[in-house]
Image (tube, rainbow, N blue to C red; front, side, top):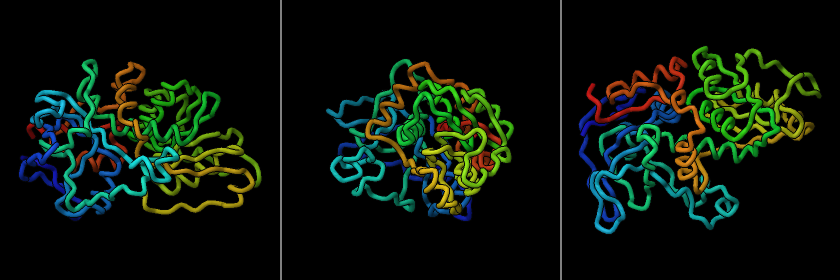
Length: 339
């Protein structure tokens, strides 16, 4: 089968690889759509993946074959529903299964993601797509689950004044979910004009460029501070600027991954009693909640996904364009699509 394979030196190429064979209790899924994630960009463009890896984890698909008694039949539309934690360790007991102490790390050398035609999945690791939800939209379940987890970690309420820094696909999802949950005061900071406009389209109240986030005065908040900030760009400078925009007892939720560490004033953290928290992956029921929200009619779905799918042969080009901010929302890869 064709697959978009990381070949090293920051490049992806389409290669023929063996079609996976389901093991006991596994279902063979034909991938319908797979979104390009920011972590895919890091793995490829910053050369963290291992040659031979097949990336892509935001997928929807159709059951191609299933074992008897599994509850699945060929033709069933599905998304993945991984179990994020063991349920008994300290993080799991505290409602943080994404950092389960027994969770295995991803082995990128042998990783078989969904930038390919077929994928095997455990029969109990799937969710049925509702009849009213398009398969293409259902591929947003994984990043939507991440957005929902970030909002829960941030403890956002209807009276909060919220800032989102970085309005790529994840930032846009967070803005859309904030609006769907009744948050009305949402500012987005983004350098790309096309992404600033898309932030307004999905529910931001106002948009600014990053240089509008001024340094705070000594010992006092900025003129119009925020109570909760979601940092979605992964840039160290954005983390530093976001901290300066927080009000007393404010919370900074770091969602975007990056590899340059930020610098911050610990005295400001102490005097303002600020909180910095990371949001990684999703809650225990994250995928089901995400599918329900995607199927609710409360989201501007047409603004969250790029209008045209791409074939595997265009994954590399799209990653580069996403990294430059030329594409506003989620790019969907259709492995069955001809080049």
